[in-house]
Image (tube, rainbow, N blue to C red):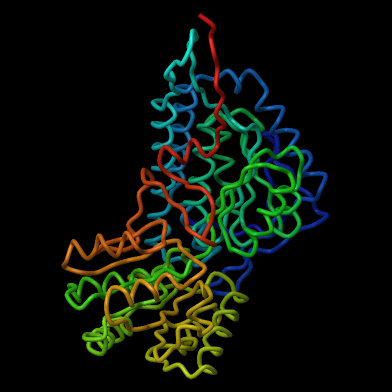
Length: 486
């Protein structure tokens, strides 16, 4: 289904089951593949944030939603999943237009969003409270209740999967949700709102507020009516949100930045490892929180392995995202490409060796877009800026290590701890190293395999809390103990 940009009027936001359009403030959605204007979108002001929070509380307290049984909420989630499936091509194309992911990845992420709603429908219908061991003449139990109104703030790199990962469990838990998408990728969130309404979700249970994070997002987090915040994005923004939440004494879930180590031991299957390393850093143009951006190769194989890696990466097809066989599209915004370029320039200033890329492609068909070549840097010191800071782009930093102890010391020498990958034929070594790495997810002889049924989150400055799995539902609930005197 093609998406035809409508520039005659800005896209409205969803509040209390109504589409609200304001002409007082709008912002633009730009296609990073071509530089063309996709849409103009309405930006909420403080009064609309208040309106959304009030509508959410009215809806969550309404018996229509409040008294809905778990299997009834589960049925609703499955209907939303059906709606996503029915609109799959449209949603994939909206994401492709707004953040430039290649078509195959966009289609896969729509399927993932649908599967996430189905998974949490199953969790909602089957998860239970507990009857706790009695220590007196009473019957005691623990039940789990929603917070009420939850703010879900999502990033631009994988909007559909992130929106589903937050909205589905928060609804399954019985909350009302105010979804604030990135200003770069607002359209998929608005489409999700439409699908939820058409599926019969009570008005006000899912609201979609569009606008800038520094204004709408900040006001939403600060709002006294918001009882819980779930955020995926950069660590600096996460720290601001955590500070506001601390002042309000409300819980937060923060899935933040990463600088994930990707480790190749001398006994690894090198061909498989090369495939894993390339997918781990260059898929999605490196714009992934779990991107394997620090490559550690055992010294005895480092030269030959890196030569093969550079040769393979040089053949990646960078093209318009809907081109046949495209493997890399543009960077999601022109401003972010400029930041990536500045990071690579800083590495050059620190004396790195550019083994591949390090500049924009020179093909005329890509000149109008925000493209950047797959880049591999070597000769870096451990304290180099590009080794320490998240680049969030197709830039791989190559380093070497001697043995397990050296590897673990280098890999853990980071403020981040989101993910890590290990390639080795020795399962005992794999277990030892995985146990010592400070990361919320560790892959062994694979990379970027993700399951909605497995918890996900980071150590250290990579975040607080765990999404996905049964714990992803409990994240949006609070426990209550009840005692019956006997």
